[in-house]
Image 1 (tube, rainbow, N blue to C red):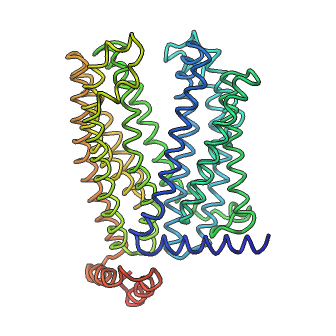
Image 2: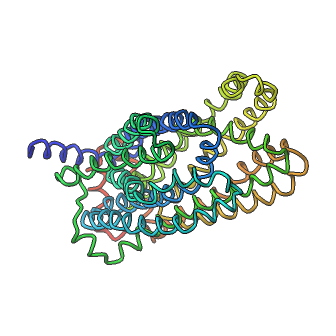
Image 3: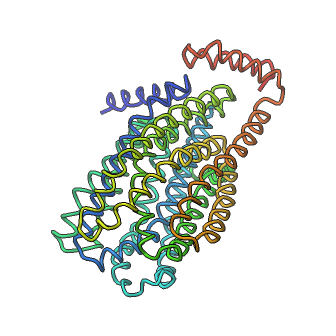
Length: 494
């Protein structure tokens, strides 16, 4: 057992060394496992929908109403996950493992505290949210689905946070392992708990919680056996010294950003109804499944980029960070454009998947038209996501949240102005807003990058010297690059 733990620790050290080395190689190595995890997650989502749809229309409506409430737990977990990824990688880049240990331990502590707080909030607000959504007729089904999550919320939030902690030390394969295991457990448990035990929607929720708990225990076992670079301890969690603030400077705005998006989605439904009734909502929502699929590679690349570039930022190597940005942007845009072209050309076939039933065939031409316009804006949507990720890797998560708020307000105002002209006007506005959003995010990216360069290298001479040394050693190993960086530090350039 000891030898196995030592071998696993050696592998973890190699993954950390790779993360601190050539950013292109590090991002490429982390990309494949992260893409696999996201792809399996998409499959799990489809399987969940398949099993719960067998419970009938009322149950399916109750589930649709409950999902935004359940997402509150997910948003908090993802916020902590991104916060942990960025700050742990940043500290490891600085060579401060003790700080990384404290942040990881505090992440676990806060995941438990926030689980309790969010459970109380959801318990007290669920009826109000149901009433606001006008879904009182399916209230019992909403509660069937939400109640298990209220009781077992630590499994959701801690599971999400744990994945971010592992990615923060470059352990993408382990992070992927717990994500894929959770999806597999969930898919296996769904039919047993939903139909075998007759628990219905409560069974679907329990399957998710049990799957998350099992995968979470796998992750904690790696920490307990000492086979990870970062260590967890109660003492580290108690010794805060401002590290909670550092964590929440990224985690808080990330959660806020997602909540803004959720509220925006709810409000824009009102404009869609004005534009084309409930049919408009369906025509708008169905193609988003393809948006998610086409964006998977860019999302995986961004997830790999954040720890790599945050570590480069922590080490003071702005050139390495910028190289990671360039590499991610190039491949993310190339893959997304290629897949968008495929979606555009084969829109008729993709529409058939949702319109095979006789009553749905009537809307196929309109759905094909919508899918093609979605294919037009997907590359811009991908670039916006990339720029947001660069801000988070530079610890400018608050700026990302603020720009998303501004963008969402402008988007809703535009939707409100054009909705009287029909559904097509809404889609044109959506396309415009995504390309307009690139300009907003790029301006903020350039501003954040300039601030990061000044913070790390107050002397332009030092910045140019570091840039030159990095270019000379880009083809070498990570140890050489860091040795040269330490020489510059001793010279007073950092």
